[in-house]
Length: 184
Image (cartoon, rainbow, N blue to C red):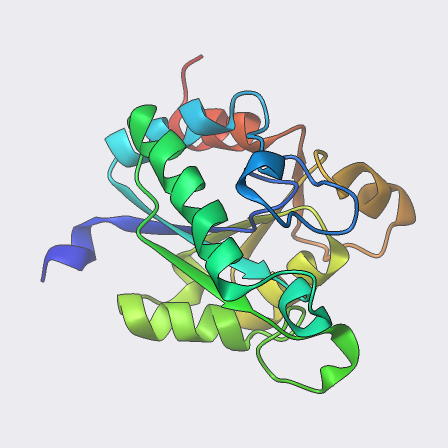
């Protein structure tokens, strides 16, 4: 099977790939890549990693973000990643607010489990990169290897403590990729 020789990495979106804007990114113009993230995604692709994004998007349920706007934001992200030489193979998202009682919203591991099922991988072989405590808790609950980046909400998350014992803390996505792949 083609998938068995490619490693999978799961990334949160806002604060990991792109700058976190206020509460939520609501338009393609507000989606701005974090310095070094596009090149990091290209390096992952060149090293035969499959890149998947897992993102909470409560703005949909709040009425601040339409599905068509979300699709336009993701189209811009795909175009910029591809222009840099990378590929994002899939984007999974939860449209619910924290109080909605859904099972797909991080820190629940459901979204990550769905990714594992779709890509036929064991999550204990998968690295998850996020910037929030919910990201770290989802990764821990799913059995992924959690990496906290200090971009986005990461610095505040780190300062608050309460990270999983096995969480790796790195300055940004580029630093995670450098560690995984070596080199500059």
